[in-house]
Length: 490
Image 1 (cartoon, rainbow, N blue to C red):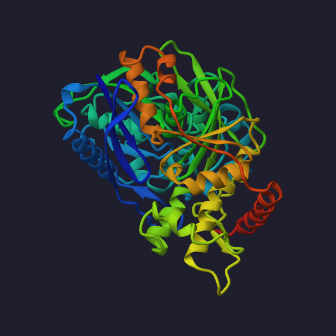
Image 2: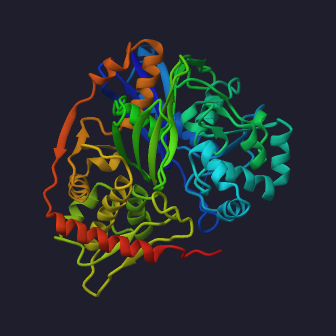
Image 3: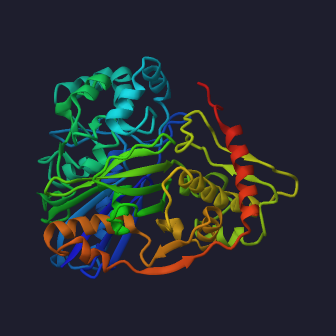
């Protein structure tokens, strides 16, 4: 029996069907619109996310018999805030996306009032617009009529996983897991539960939040009238980065991965130990077993990597597709001094500057689109190096996500970090992780040992660049990063 996984990402939804051998046998994707009401604001229409989910799933069901499916796994963009009517399931406003920077002033206010240390102690996070809590605080302050219906219990609050489960179950279930909850600024990492203290600080009624369930195990059945005739147990839930960690079978302490998606996220499994970082890394929940054991991770969150490539395609229109970047960048030997800092929505780890903005520097009359495209790929490698230099030593870096298929990027990455980069046969490990969780929860796989057996190496990239040359390029990058900071002041 195979597993259906729904990967509700930042720019679209992908549905995949995974066989008991751990192979993707069918896949379909559907993009949805990105809304930018003001500079630094990013929103999604929840109904468009739901329709993309239906369309992607409908497409895979054209090639896979629904009777072959045994469970549903869900993974999602994290930190994005969704409100919906518990009765009609309609949303009163667009979702505020994790990339959105509108709450920078709220973060500064909370910091000035002395709350950051306590928030960090409880959550493992920091006061940054990235996380959900300040988004909800902004809604309460700026849209009081909407917020009143949250307080009265009419509107539910959740992340994208909670919203999709509500839609799939005709509003019967309002749930999430620890990996998503731990990104809200409302979750106590130590106790493994919602925090009354944090809910009070951010002004969020606890009753509006979803119930917490394990990451695998049967949670709720989908409603066939709501979800394309499918009546299957929803049996796996995880935020996208924790799902990718699971999909890369990083089950042991010290195992780590880097996912190249809209942003890039480096996670290292720290087991049952809640480790903290003073170098800009986040402590986060990785997953919770049905027995209640909580596994933690350290995370370095980079906001814009694949989104920078998307910007080359849609904003500058200098490439026709993401896949074209490797061929274009390969036409030049280097960037000819051009450096791109893709702080298009501020800087995440390890800098954490919501006021930073994108910067392209070193342009001359000889600069071509190839130099800018190559500088974009180099920027991704530089950003990942910045994070890895703050993490415990690792022997190699496992990579996944759409951009991991780019050989030039993987080689640049190996050269920059001075470590082998391992690319698995399946790079869409975010969806794979959701399938693994759901299959583990329904007996498709008996244990994580069975899942280990499904992982297969496709290619290993060894560092080949001279260390001094790689370090000099990185030093030039760090100089450009400093110049990008603090640009947006309003």
